[in-house]
Every structure is written in structure tokens, then in C-alpha cells.
Image (cartoon, rainbow, N blue to C red; front, side, top):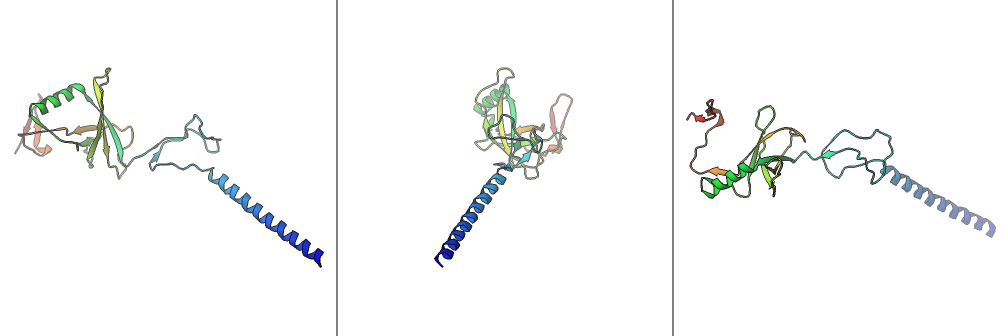
Length: 187
């Protein structure tokens, strides 16, 4: 009968509406679940968290959750005295040293005295001298595939900004220094 048909059509429409409502609820739940995890925009190493698991966090809150640092490549900030800079520029202008060019290489000596295997590249040199220390900043970028270098680690940098014209290159093992600091090379 027509009444049975109308009842069945109404039941079908109600069931379809219930399915659409359930799909919308499932999508809302999926979006809410996605908002419960936090993903980093960079690859790196995470520091300790400042909050405990389960704590309520909101967008634009003042308390940072943690700090993530990129480790490969890693930047090494170095300070150089303005006196050394003046001496270097004077030696280059007098022709005693040849400027290395735009691709200045940097080597590192680690805290334990070993030389870091990777060579870095000087990324920038500071534009002003810190008046309290008489130094200016340099930044070098190093490949760090083994994650050996960590932020805050103490290293010594050898920056090749100038090359001596009439000099010999000898292995460091063959160089000794006397009590005055003068070098002697065995050839």
C-alpha cells in the first residue's frame, strides 16, 4: 500500500541521515584525535619536556613544550677577537697571506682533543664587534651525520681565512714546539 511505501521511504531517509550523521561524528572524532598529537616541523633531537604528559596545552601558550634542535647539519658559533681580524686583514693587504675566497673552510678540535672528521663551511661573519668582549661572531655549518656534535658542546675552531704564500705544509705530527711556543718541523 501507499502508506507502507511512505513509511519505508521515511525509514530509509532517516537511516541515510543517521549514517551521514555518524560519518560526520567519526570525522569530528578523527580531527580531535589528530589534534592530540604534536608533530615537529623539523627533524632533530628533542630536549627534556617542560610539561608532564596529560597536561593541558593550548595554542599560543607562553610555556614552551620543549626545544627541538636540528643536528645534521649543525651550526657552530665562534667568536674571534677584533685584533686577530685586524692582523688578518693587514697580512692580506700586505700580500703575506692570500685570501681564501668565499668558501672558507673550518675544522674543529673537540673537547677530548681529537679533530672532527667533517669539514665545515663559514656561513657568515658578524658585522659588528661586541664592545664588552672585543670579539665578533662567526658561524660555520658542519655536516653531522653521526650526531657527534651536540648544541652547547665546547669545541675549538680553526678557520682558514688566509693562506700563507711561501710556506710548506707538513703533517702536524712532525711539528714540535719549544718552551717559547716556536714550532720546529722535521722533514
